[in-house]
Image (cartoon, rainbow, N blue to C red; front, side, top):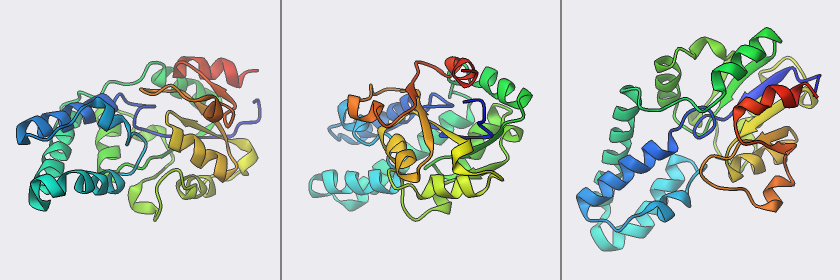
Length: 220
């Protein structure tokens, strides 16, 4: 892996421990409104775009509570999550700062490619003094299709001044790995809340427990 010239970072669950906060906010909203909801429901949509999650919630709950109530549920949970992010509640994932320091020393270009909204990406980067660590950002607003469609990684790759063969994607989710595979870019998975299947592992260069192990892998 000595020829890696650029690394594309996913964000939620890879760089920041946001998934637990999203779940906390959504469960809080569900409890407030009397919706039947639990972590098993939440985890079905990890790595999926906001629009797809919200559509699923409407399909699940509109027949029981009505469209307006579901809109209130969605808006409350989103706003509550943003409050938590702005309060600095999203912890950095282990090894992130050390990895960024290593890549900076090696002069490896870095970007973020996240299905999240640009507003949220900026909040999390700014709160953790990481805005200057990435040369470019590709967000939900920049693509028409969410992961596992490869569009977001195709756009991120195009912003580097090197070929796909010299790029590496870091991902935590199944949909992210599938998108990387379809984009034809090598991917390392650092699982967050869901353990990958053997089929997903087979599409990666490696599955590593934390970001701490990335530098040693790159030195091989």
